[in-house]
Length: 345
Ligand SMILES: *Cc1c(COP(=O)(O)O)cnc(C)c1O
Image (cartoon, rainbow, N blue to C red; front, top):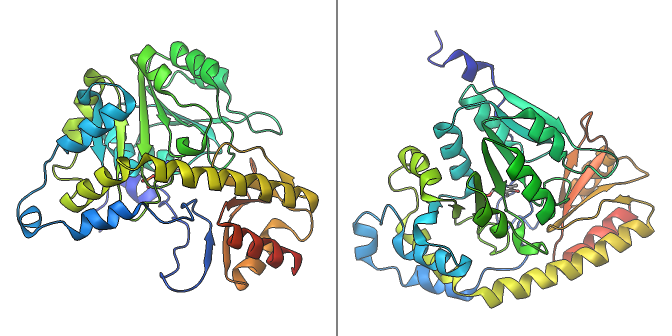
């Protein structure tokens, strides 16, 4: 006898990218972490967390943090919902909303995972052409109750501009979730679309731009009427006192984040040029990674050879995206080590 619901037994589990133990010395270019450390203010805030803050429950609404986010985004504080990473907010959305759920393909797989957990119908809308542009008309035609759009998208690095976001939001009756995990590396954000459209919800995370993937903090931005149902599905104390203090310190150090994002963008341009010089196909990217297709050896062989050399990248080999590698932009030193390892393959 299995205790599980039939659709849970039948669904595919999410497969996270490989996480080698810290100190293993591996160069991790497979899950799009920021290669630079978080602001020193974060460690300081954690060191200063007192016994009292640990003894009592944290603020379930993360009030101080919401105020800081609202000020940064120039929106009211009741437009902000705190999450234990944006994954946690994707879970809340899937739990609270009815189906069907529409997604572009390829995209971040966790939207489909959570649709499957909720037994919602999934509508997959293939990206278009060699450039793998998100199919705006296709997503509108799908007419789903919830549409997820990673913008910039992963693994493609492509981004819809303000006009396309506007068309998409206006064309959908249902909820449009714009996942801005990579927005700190992109030229424009979805705040104008959020202000203009009642059905838009933005997801943000400190995992990428703020170098805090291990800390687990993300937030949703939407009108209070849209957040109301999500608050009901939120775990009560989903953001710990330590995370609230650390996230606040990180958000207060915008210069640190901006400086590191600039370094990543410079590294991205250099890496794209170097891989292009080696005959690789390199998709344009507005994020902190590059989608690439090597010539020789094949993507699969290269991923294995790089792993043997202590460098992890993410292999994509599906009908919609055959023989591709997604490579996170590392530090200059890591990028050089990558190129050297490629040349030795
Ligand atoms: C990395 C990533 C996330 C995960 O964010 P967390 O806040 O670490 O849960 C969400 N969406 C996309 C598109 C991502 O690439």
